[in-house]
Length: 280
Image (cartoon, rainbow, N blue to C red; front, side):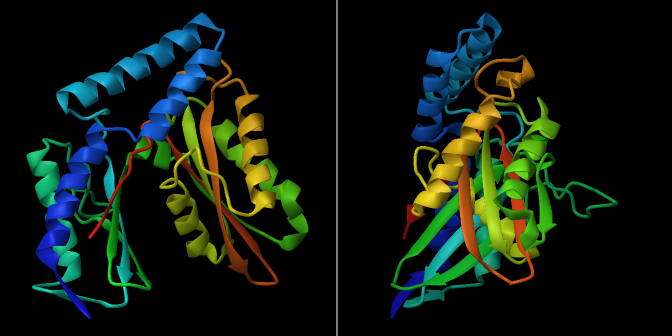
């Protein structure tokens, strides 16, 4: 049994909050530059040029890519042979977010109550997702999620009779309804299967996957490619001004489900699809 002090989790989350908000993953940067090279409209080219300039300045000056530094989504894969010591896990995670958003001068965007509002003042609590895995390591992923794109997400509880076409139509419907609101080019996370809540979580986890990766099942890998092509044929374009680039990637995650259902969730992320991972 390996002992791990929760202070290390706090320190890591503090650092990852800042890094994620200031530096786009390389796969997303590459995707944006690739889309810029194939755009033929002057407005679309100009918008993508501005996006590239923006993340280059953020890299060089170590400042946030976007004013919306998001709600901190923290994914922990905890090895079953790890014994966490020194305090509570939830407290350690929230303290890391609190320190990161303070030290990084990141905007605090969390309210105490969903209806009565009132800012918490430190961007806590984090949205915490834990999973017990084999081994003696803890993998921490921090994905700050802005709500201009989060608000454009949707879930639908399909009956199996809707079939694959029903899922395809739903994904396109969500993206088309979103239009320019989520600051395209977007990344589309899709969760299929499980239960109502699990499908939504799958779609969020899909956004943590590199956009240049593919689902291990060729059936779903083909579906990812097909949906990316169809989304980009919608013509919404960068920031909604038209063009060939509406989405940078479509990532699909799946789970077994009940014989009577086929849940499908679509989680939209803007071109600032941020996430950083570290293994302790």
